[in-house]
Amino acid sequence: MKLFAATAAFCLAAAPALASVVFESKMTNADGKTVSSTETTVQDGKVLMKSQGDPEYGLPGSTTIFRGQAQEMVMVDHQNQTYSIMTANQMRATMSGLQAQMREALQGVPEEQRAAMEKSMAAMMGGGAESSVTVNATGESKTIDGDSAHEYEVMRDGALTHRVWAVEPSALTGGGELAVLYNDMAAFYEGMPMTKKVEWMFDLDGSFDGRMPVLMEEYGASGALETRTEIASREAADLPASAFEPPAGYTQQDMMGGR
Image 1: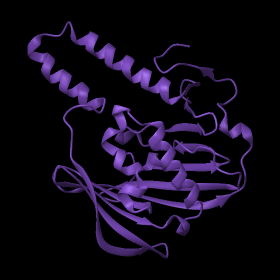
Image 2 (image 1 turned 30 degrees about the vertical axis):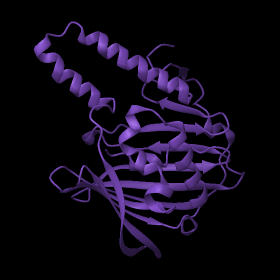
Image 3 (image 1 turned 120 degrees about the horizontal axis):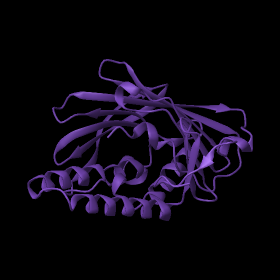
């Protein structure tokens, strides 16, 4: 799942007031071509993520805001000039509603096709058979941007899916705030099927000995490298409060398409 670039995007709760920190992540494919780039600004317990995306890879551009104190996720659709605001409970209810709609849609499907469609839908919603995922420190390290990064291997059902290099949070500008973001992200999405397969990514203490991932490689079923994602940070000037609000003139819309 190509989600690493988004992990610095969603959740930061109750961080102390401080100057903005911008986390820049870039995903490239095996040939070194940029697939997507994301700029995530963390400020006063709020997160603003802007992703350029790449239509060739089915990754549209997007803007996502997380307001930590309110525990609200704001998803902005610039193409339709709409936005939706969701709490964790509302998001879980939306996922349950989608699953119910899918089950209802299957009622009219011929029995010989239903099993295949159910399997496909389960995979799309993060369901299906449980996988055994382990994250192991290899004992290897290398220098990334002047910092010592420790290597970890992620195995799913015995097959390598990711290599991760992680540094001490203090080595990254704003690393402490980003660590809080990861922890709150895990809490916000707890119990949601769509994130079940990447829970290890958010568990910094359990997966990476408290270190912060700064480089991740993802491998396909054949063992070949598919994507490579790097993250860096820098200080930035404070943003106005309006930067963490939906654009003026946009219409609020619920996740199921209603207004």
